[in-house]
Amino acid sequence: MPSQTATEENSTAGVTPAAPWRIQAVSVLPNHRLALTFRDGLIGVADFSAIGTTANPGIYAPLVDINFFGQVKIELGVLTWPNGADIDPAWLHENLATDKTWSVPF
Image (tube, rainbow, N blue to C red):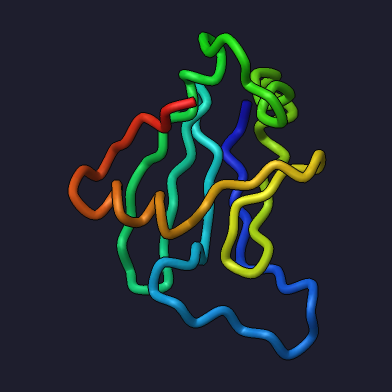
């Protein structure tokens, strides 16, 4: 699957999320990974591959499908998917600040 890059998309005109932990850009990488760039310049890779082994993924279940996973978008600095699933950007930022690659637990 080719890499895709999304940049900041604001659903509310004139709103610019300025918090340093807001996500500015995302690229889809192989094996359920995302390369992230935050507003403060921090970059890192979030590994979502654990989604395939969790017993109860809940709203995240569709992310197992690599094509669905690749539909990630940025809305007001937050990673979102078409089914309404999202990931807290502050949590991602905190973990990627110490380790440039982080396995997201599910």
